[in-house]
Amino acid sequence: MILDRFDQDVLSASGRPEDIIREFYGKKIGKNNAGKYVTGIKTHLKAKQRMPELDGKSGMSEVITKYDGTKTIKRMMMLSESDADDPTRVMQLNGLDPLKWELIKYGIRRNDWDVTMKMKNDTKMWREKETNHLFAIDLVVKPIQSVLSTDYIVQVFEGLETPKIKTIKHEPGNYLFELPIMDLHLGKLAWGEETGDDYDLKIAEKVYKETVSDLIAKAQILGTYEEILFPVGQDYFHIDNSTSATTAGTPVDTDSRWEKMFAVGVNLLVWTLEQLRQIAPVFVVYVPGNHDKILSYCAVYTLYARYKECKDVNVNLSPTPRKYYRFGVNLIGFSHGKEGKRIEHLMQQERPEDWGKTLYREWHLGDLHHEEAKEIGGVKIRRISSVTATDAWHAEKGYRSVRMAQAFIWDKEKGRQFVLDSNVNY
Image (cartoon, rainbow, N blue to C red; front, top):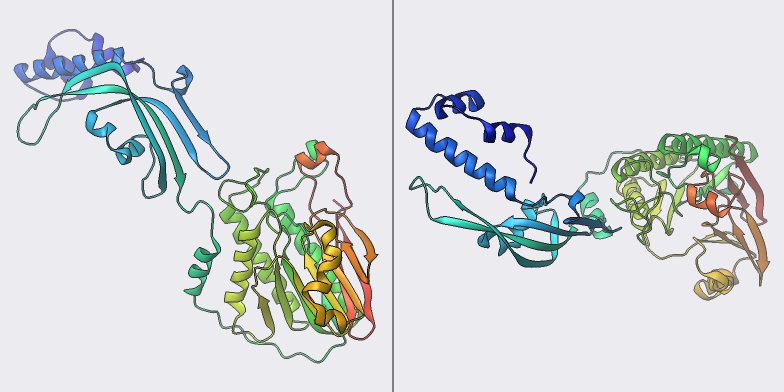
């Protein structure tokens, strides 16, 4: 092992032992004791100098981290027999808090190299010699609670005090205002030089607020509203855990820590609800995406916890992958669109009663970030655009789309009346 400069100077120092102790350690010690100390220190440094390098550059240390935070550590370590028999101690020696990491695997193999040292104890100056051996360590650990669970989040929010929010009295309106902000990917990082558009947490927040404000302003020009439908999810967040990966574990380019991203996202949703509930009662539905199933659910649960005593906000917490909303003769289905061609027949099968009582039926799907629509078997299947920027992966693959959001205005008896567009021009 290569000694640092201080160790080298101590090892090469010559002269009276008491002078060496005073020069290097700032202590005044008698001649006899100083001689013992210097002899012990130099013996230790010589043994340390003979030890092989154990850092990553020597190829004797390897740490592999997987998408879910699992670490595989393969390392050569000098350990006593008692330490080698204690996996918790080995975790601590590798800088891992046993309260924060779960031990998955522990393997150890002893090599031939060893160092023998005298060890102090509380009852006498020196006790019997203890030999440290060189061991090959194979350690696999997984972070405890690195990925949030819905049960964990529910438990947290159940303990929160519900804020006192006054219900707003509304005059009866004529229409349903649907505001589906699909695929925001809050927390995504894109560099304009590489992808054509810059995108980060601050830019996404600005784009979202401008888009929502634009669509609300346009909707208010066109009429009054009996209800507002506000689906949340559909890849609202870009990542779903502490390892900057999606729900399935795919690593993605991320601008921020998940805690900050989540806080910004929840504040944006609360801001949106406060705008909407000034106009009409709001119905929030959770629609899972493929990037953020857990965090979007947590965000919707936050809204539920905040507004559960407020009569003009209703939150649907159902974890089902598809949601339906009936308004007069209109039936609107929401999904992220991973069903393929099966989506053409699911509305009839899953909501037969609503299907039979409605005339206008539409699926509103996300995921692809561009607009397309087709009608099959009495249902219009509509993909809705996104305001998010193109990231590096999509840019490399050549996926491009117009950045925009859409909102819809429905008449209870006459079906969909208006499609509102809000384009992103930067």
